[in-house]
Amino acid sequence: MSDEEHHFESKADAGASKTYPQQAGTIRKNGYIVIKSRPCKVVEVSTSKTGKHGHAKCHFVGIDIFTGKKLEDIVPSSHNCDVPHVSRADYQLIDISEDGFVSLLTDSGNTKDDLRLPTDETLLKQLKEGFAEGKDMIVSVMSAMGEEQICAVKDIGANK
Image 1 (spheres, helix red, strand yellow):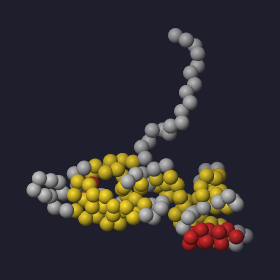
Image 2 (cartoon, rainbow, N blue to C red):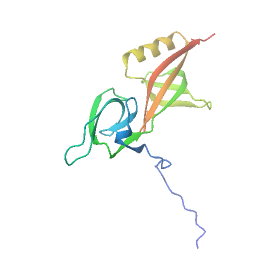
Image 3 (cartoon, rainbow, N blue to C red):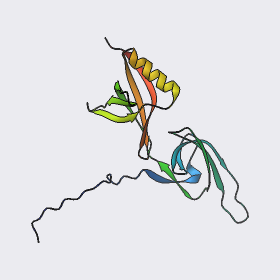
Image 4 (cartoon, helix red, strand yellow):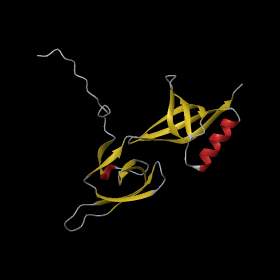
């Protein structure tokens, strides 16, 4: 046995999966599903009858939760689909930098500086105007499959 210490460089996360399997027939409208490797919110589900030799099929129409693009997929209802782990977190806005990043305050008192300004025009305008007026702004950040994006802005009053 050697007394050497071994150091391992690991760039992996804790092994938590970005998705979990769920039977296609149990996914409903307003749920989430992975279509073409993108996390989507399901806006329409239709199920076809079984054919002479086949399975019932589920036709999903989803909207990408980050880009807003409409995606479609058809899956046999007995097969498993990937469902993304989607989470939302609220942070207080501290600063908006010139290079398009925001500085946010987490619940633990740390700062989060790796998020870009939203691409949605109305959200961007609301965020910039509120910040320019010195208002306390709370931003909701949605995260799924290793991506994060600001999805909502709330004004909680002016700084005094």
